Image 1 (cartoon, rainbow, N blue to C red):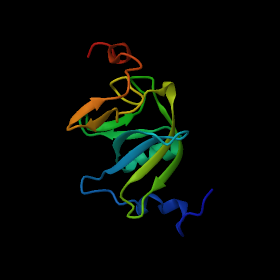
Image 2 (cartoon, rainbow, N blue to C red):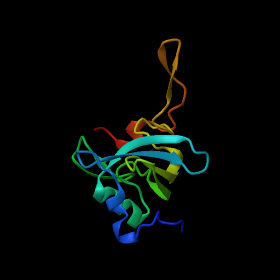
Image 3 (cartoon, helix red, strand yellow):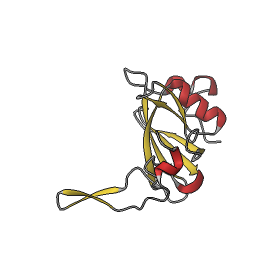
Length: 137
């Protein structure tokens, strides 16, 4: 394991700068090719559970509860590495993505649009219809 930046394992969470709402952005990337898959929010409990379980857990702002990635879709994330930026206010998770789908739209990545000539162009295909993933909601 890498050096803990002069910190003990008991206080690693205390080194994290959560925002005024108690959240920190988490950028999620594929461990194999470093493609950005998604961005989500984590609170202290989500980050601790992620590290403890090795499975990605986020804070759903819309549902106001913990969101265990894949609990509905089956497309979970096994966390391979957790990084904290220099200001301690952004997390990067390197993950192994189950089924190759991270986005609720059925795509590999939530970042499937690029700006071309002043408009957003979809450049990544839907790998699985969201209706098949989530059913009628």
